[in-house]
Image 1 (cartoon, rainbow, N blue to C red):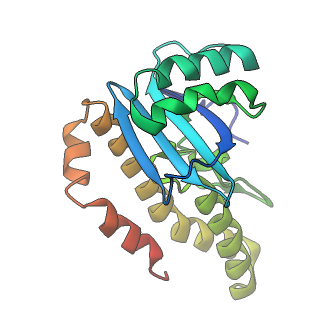
Image 2: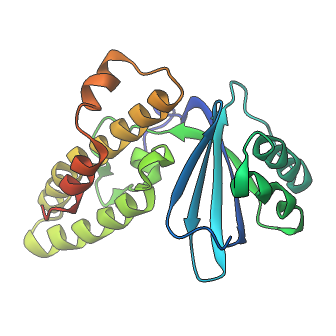
Length: 210
């Protein structure tokens, strides 16, 4: 739709992910830091959890294989103590390990042309620091259906959809990136101004009907 006007932009960070047996100590989402590495543990069920490790990486790897990903995660987890550090001993048996650079996509013009549109990560990919990427994609679809019901003309519906979605998608994208840079000690002045609004306030804003 847009030719070569937009390419994913590297953020300088990458994420390593894996599903694991849930430790007995994990009662809710947990965050921990060891130097520049951030560990996030999210309970999925009574027996399973999801582990994500975020770390700086200037040059992304290409086609990293499963064993390499596991070895890298074990090396990062060796910097942690306690039961989070002990997770390095159970990753070996997991086949779900995945890796990817954290990229951002910002399509800075309306996301529809004629009868064709884009949404979700194709239009506004974000870092995972607010855990809202999938939610923003789902909202794109729900709001699109609402605007198609509300308007008799397709062009009006798509224009209204874009105007409703842009502020929320932009807030999530900018705030997530600000959190990422702050955690690594590299926030910009714009980040610091944005982060004057605490995370619960942003979550409360997203929870409000609009």
